[in-house]
Length: 181
Image 1 (cartoon, rainbow, N blue to C red):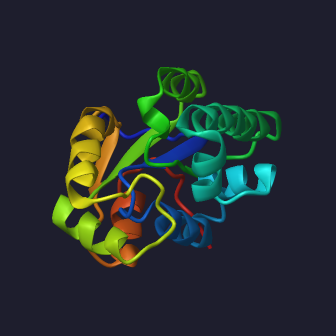
Image 2 (image 1 turned 60 degrees about the horizontal axis):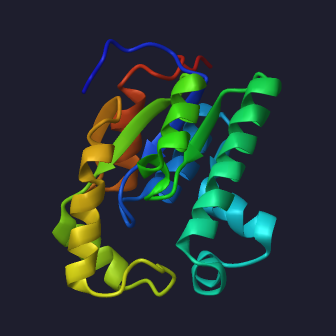
């Protein structure tokens, strides 16, 4: 899972809900100066609806369609502007074959923020905006269903620690150019 480090123009954070993708994405932006995009936030801005409302009103298939559309836009913008970009993906983004193909086509580095399921449960139980968090049994099943997709990431970083330590681990991977003062 850990290939030879090389620089990428798009670095994507992947992982299950609650693993810290949004938080780490913001911190990486501060450390690297790269623009960052939170895909779920992009979806809410594009639709004017919260993620939970999209699921409730339109269903998961429509959410996944919108998600794929927004991912394609984010990657096209990064390519057109020739700007390196950090993208925090939704927990299910890479489970969709068309999204994975698009990410590979854009040579995106996928970094899995791995966190024990017990910690994910603890974190998500305190949030009320997770449409796929219904109960513990379905949460655990969804995690198991997605695990193989996360394991296909190019890199794996332990996110069961302070987010600043997670950022340090990611920067040590060598996928970002060295920042010189």
